[in-house]
Every structure is written in C-alpha cells, then in structure tokens.
Amino acid sequence: MKTPIRNSVLAYALAAILGSCNMDVVPPAEISAPSYWKTDKDAWYALNSCYEKMKGLDIWDEMCTDNAHSHKPWEGNFELVQQNGISTAAPYGDYNFEAVRRANTFIDNVDKCEMSDDMKGRMKAEARFFRAFSYLELTQYFGKVAIITEAVPYDAPNMPRNSVEEVHAFILDELAEIATLLPESYPGGYLNETGRITRYAALALRARAALYFGNYTEAEKSAREVIDSKKYALFRIASLDAAQQQEADEMDLYVDFTARGIDKDAFVKGMFSYEALWHGANASPANKEYVLTHEYMADANANDAYRYTYFIPLDMSIKDGYSSYEPMQDLIDAYWSVDGKTIPTPPTVDQRKMDYEKIWNHAKDLDKTAYKKFATGTDLMTYEYMKEFKNRDSRLYVSFMFPFKGWHGSPVGEHYYRWDPSNIDALGNFSWTGFSYRKMVSVNPYNQSASPDDYPTIRYAEVLLTFAEAHLMNTGYDKEVRDALNDIRDRCGMPDVPAALSKDAAIDLLRNERRIELAGEGHRFDDVRRYGSTYCQHYLNGPSTAPNGHVVITKVWDDRLLLMPIPTSAIDTNPLLKDDQNPGY
Image (cartoon, rainbow, N blue to C red; front, side):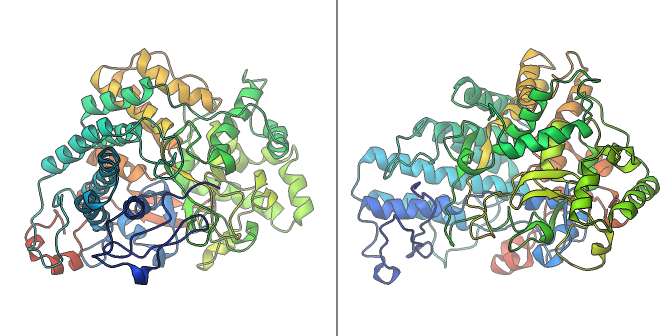
C-alpha cells in the first residue's frame, strides 16, 4: 500500500487530523498548542495538511468556457460565468487563503521540531511550493491579492492587495528558489514518500505560471530544465488488453486506415496510451508522465468523488452517475481531422438536428442486442450524423462518449453510448449536450462511486506544450517547437505537425493542440483569458447546442470576465477591498 502523504491534517491550528490504516494518528482531543511542534511526526502531520489542499482534478473552470457545461446549477456558478451573470453576491473563484495560512503556520513553527536542519529546510520548501501554487490560483482569478508570508493572528489588521506585478514576481521568485532546495526524487518511506514535491515539480509549476503571465523567457527556461532532465516521458503502452483489442477491431468503422495510409497499430496504441495514463497502476508517481501527483487511496476520506460519479450517465453506472460535468459540442468540433492539421467544417445546427433525428428514430426503440448490432454494423456510417466522427483525431475517440460508439473497457464493461434527447427535459442524470466524458473516468471505482486512482496535477505533456508555446513566441516556429509537439502527436498515433508555418498559423495550431491534449484538465479558462479579449469574443459568445438543436447555453462574453469579482463576503471581512474591486463589478 502506498504511504498517503495527503491523508492527514493538523488539528490544532490547521484542521482536523484524518487517519488511515497505515498511519499513527494522535487523537485530536490530545493535541494542544503547547504539546504540538515537538517531533518530526508533528512536522509530517502538519506538512501533510498542506498537501491536502493541493488540487487534483480541476475540471470546474472548464465549465466556464466553450469546452464544458454543468446543467445542475447547484453544483456551481459555472453557467453564470458563461452567461456573464456573476456578481459580488454570486461570484466565481475561490477567494480563500487557507492554503497560504497552512503553509505559513508550518514555516513559522517547524523549527521547534526535533529533526535535522536539512529536513526542516526541505519541508519548508515544500510548504512554500503550496503557498506559491495557491497564489497562482488566486492571481489567476482576482489579479491583485495580498502577499502574506507569515502566520498572522485572527485579529490582525486588514491588509490591502499587492499589485499584479508584485504577485507575479513573488510566485516566480519563490518557485525558482524552491527548485534549488528540493531533491530531484525521493527514495520512499517515512518523510521521503515518492510522491512529494520535487525540484522538477517546482520548475514545471514555474513554467506554467510564467506562461500564464506572458513571461515567455522564464516559461521556456523552466520548461526546458524539466525536459533536459530526461526524467520524464509521455506514457505509452506496448500492447492492447482484451477490451482494448475489441474496440480496436471496431475502429475500422471510424477510420479509413488503408485508404488514408494510416498505421492502424500506431493509431490504436496511441488512443489507448492517451487513455490508460489515467487508470489503475498507471496512475501513480511512478508514471514518468506524472511530474506532480495528487495521491488518493481506496478510502472513504481519501478518494476523488468526481471522476466516476459526475462524469458518466446513470445508465452506465453501477451505483451513481450524474453526467452533470458534460463536454460541449464546441469542443467536439475543435478536434482535428485524422491528418492532424485541418478541422472539419461542422454542419449547421438545423442540418445536425435533422441528421440526428434520422438516426435516433431508427435506433431509439432497439433493445440492447439490436443496438449493439447497429452500432457495429456497416450501416452505421451511412447516416450523415455519424460522418462527423469519421477520420478524426485519435484522442476524440477516447476522450468522450458519443452516440453509438462502443467502450469495452468502461466501468461496466462493454457499453454502447445512447443519447436520448428527451432526457433534456428534466435535471436528470444524463448529459444535455449529447456527450459524456470518457477521459479520466475511473474504470475501477472505489465503492462504485469515486476514484482511488492518483491524478497528475502536472503532467509532462503540459510541460512540452508550455515549452513549445514559449519557444515559439521567443524564437519562432522551428525544429524545437516541432519536436515538442511531435512527441505529443507520436504518443497518440497522430501525424507530425506541419514542417513549415507562419508564426500566426503556428500559434493557431498550438492553441488548438493544447485545447485538445489538455481537454477537461482545467486549463481552458486560464488559456482563453490570456489569449485576450478578441479571442474570447470569438469563442465565448453565442449558443452551444446539442445534436437535436437544443440550446444548452448561450455564451455571453464581457471583458470584465478577464478577472473574477471579489466576493461581498470578503469585502465585509476586509473593508479595504471595497474601493479596490476588479473592473466591471
């Protein structure tokens, strides 16, 4: 069993301690200020509380964009962002300094513990990492925020916000220094668990931050250090299991391998390499694609309740399935053709409606056996609707469940996706958009309701994309950019990127490649806003529809959405924020 570096939290000043089957836990009633901060175990517990605040799955921001949607308003104010309806009373974004407070409390107190100075220094660097990570999230939502580097009493004076420039410099400087203090890897065991923050996790986060800030020089520099370390690689499978082989046999319906000169073996291995990196034994710090890992256990208090329950529809779940986090047609339409450089022109809404109505009228009354026969038969692709899924990017087929497509390795085994438009009429546990997520879904859920699989909070594919974009902006579209992108393409069985492009065309290609490769992982909201107002006006306006023509959401962009509002509750707590609200709120 893995040692859980995230499954305990300090009761005294931080939070309540959570126990696990292989952790020695002090009962919270016996912890007090005078008795804490004595031993290395006290430091271990307290630092683990900082790990507890690190994000794993981060899909929520995607549902504020043109990538995804949530049709259950009680799950969050996502639709309000998409429709420009947020306010100080109905805000979006977590204006919360708890992770900062936990890190500062640890840094201020760990010197009291009996342990080596080297270990104290390393642990302080880990805590500083989480503080910097929290500030990155805060500044992405709110721009200016107060920089707090020590534990302050609850009755401390209110603090004004620091400038965006100061916050950005603080994050980049902190992560640069942290990277010099942390080891490249850990041997395992108590205090040295393999999933802890490494030098390269700090550099990867720094690369992300610098890219978000438009500091392409520092983004390229930090990403290059991670790449040049040779410690990371994209996950690839060597062979197919039985379920994957069944699906591979059916892929001839979707891809004209021979006619298009496509290596079927490379294509299907690419599909399943991309999919399998999230599953089971592959989901761990031992995976060379996992630069930073959020670890989970098969335990009621330490699992991911979203990647099973919220991603899949009720009719394919064993216990719970809401399909309330749903990919939108806008995202489906963005996937490349199988050539890797063109995007098919989608039909009009009315044409797609007629096309889906025709195929659904044929299939809606079929029983399970007949539905499978139709979904795997040669007649399927004679329907115009299914031609939208013909000869497309390999990642499309394993990122989403779409009508009639089979998934043999699903949580319930063989499953052919059905989408019934009549389910839109109620806030039920079926997708409104016509699609459900397949990417990241737990195929072996804990207690049939959550995922025990670890999650790559930063994976190597993101580092390659960051390097490619930063180098493109600094130098141009050259061999180094192409090599980084072609590594990603090779892993998923897609053709190399074009050998020559203008800088503007290269930027467009890279932005779409990033959107596809990182779909559902929480980057799109940050990306569209850093691309600027003109980009947002183009992509985040207008209706998003389902296959039957139903308008799922009408997106409304306003430049005020470049930042989120400081909530009324925060202003009530700190009156200094009243006259320092973000523009438009």
